[in-house]
Image (cartoon, rainbow, N blue to C red; front, side):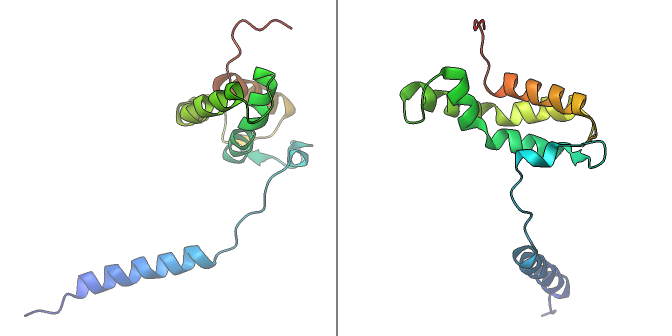
Length: 124
């Protein structure tokens, strides 16, 4: 019987990747101050979208006018989480990969908020 060299190499490579993935440094959490002065310090689109997705509970609180724990807020969060992948796809198709201006950041943020937490019929 022949020794399975290819299998051993592939399994070893997979194990090395898992060890590398576990030991690499994770990026810190992003806060709103990261998005100031984008011309001097541009941000990747994915970081911006991740930050907006992480704010879904706050967006739902603002959109429904209800505090966390209420049924309306919970429904809003659940519906928003169901829309994440389609909203990401739409944002990735529409906006550049590097956000380097306040105008593009504003447009991306408003588009993401409207996609994740639609507020039809609300007049302010």
